[in-house]
Amino acid sequence: MGYDLVIVANRLPVDRVEQPDGTSTWRPSPGGLVSAIEPVMRADDGVWMGWPGGTEQDLEPFEADGLSLHPMSMTAEEIEGHYEGFSNATLWPLYHDLVAKPEFHREWWDTYVSVNQRFADEAAELANEDALVWVQDYQLQLVPQMLRELRPDLRIGFYLHIPFPPAELFQQLPWRRQLLEGLLGADLVGFQLPGGAGNFVRLVRQRVGHKTHRDLVYLPDGRTVRAAAFPISIDAAGFEELARSEEVTSRAKEIRAALGDPSKIFLGVDRLDYTKGIYARLRAYAELLEDGALDVEDAVFVQVAVPSREHVEEYQRLRDEIDRLVGRINGDLGRIGRPAISYLHSSYPREEMAALYRAADVMVVTPYRDGMNLVAKEYVACRYDDAGALVLSEFAGAADELRQAWLVNPYDINGMKAALLEAYRADGKDLTKRMKAMRKTVSHNDVRAWADHFMSELSHVRDKHGKAVRPASRS
Ligand code: F6P
Image (cartoon, rainbow, N blue to C red):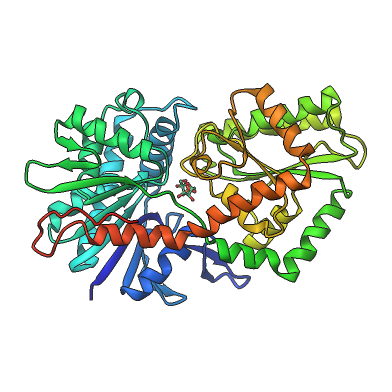
């Protein structure tokens, strides 16, 4: 039996949970993408293909909470070459403004190609005639073209969750042409921001030599590919409901009390990733304490750093650097029962995150480069009280929408210090005005609207005779 909708992603939308008796079950992972795509999957008889993590082989397809899931196993060599290597030590830094130096290794590329081919082969098997296939993210950029060769009848969409870099950076990649051609297998290529879509179209014109006009690429075989921006979002109503719950409300109070009831709580929540600007942000905060502008008796910075990609060298180095910095700041500036920084290297369930968002007076999101940054949107969704300040990097995709945040350049430490202080000192009226405006934006453009928009544009890309048609523009 095949499916009318196939989601192809590097990871499955469920996490494996080990039971005390040694058996294991699956739990839906808290990511927003699942909640966005889940209703479409149910309505359209869909399946989700992806890696469940780990090296277990020959996993059988299964259902979790009524969703059809198709696990793709990976060997230890594939994890090293495809996931940790080419995806996260080559593409990730290259696509994030070279915040770290990308490594180029031919063996990693070979593994990336073979894993992409395996995903494409499997998707070709799973898809019904004329089905819709939606490929997700930078780990699978070759899948659209590989799949089109196997199944020209399919409608293929691709969405890039991370930034797409300007030509000056992208062209360093030895396999730049192959990646561009891989993406051109899709009918619709979605990006977070119009800038990414523009970079892609320009590169296709320069490097592959196809004709382009605005957001369209004309292929020699008569096919048209559209590249456009679809800024991703969160389940805003779900977060608000959680934030309003009694459990979260009392947990937020508990958190404040456990921190010694400071007058203001600053909060950072990030995967422990060098793109997130954690080091510079903590330094800026520490300098405010040193300058006497803030006092550990009044304020505390809670930094949650979610462990991530722990086998990749740059991530191990970052962890050591942050550990050392936090130790030094607390050693120099903390007092008994009053650390300057409360540092948590762990991941937490959604409920705990909502309680932290409710407890925090100033949310600090300062990546050097970020596709969107959903933490910023989650904070806004949880502040139904119209209180709380958001300090946000200009280089996060979210800054395009959340214009009422205190926008900062994360490379400018003095500028960040000034913004942190302004947000700390802002009066209630100013905070309310800013938060109300940001909440309107987030609740209007939620993740359902994002998924519906992409899917409807994709289903209009070609008519049933395979002829390219321009999707109707949305008002
Ligand atoms: O932001 C890109 C992304 O791949 C997300 O899709 C994912 O949630 C996050 O990075 C972490 O990715 P992973 O743990 O799969 O490397």
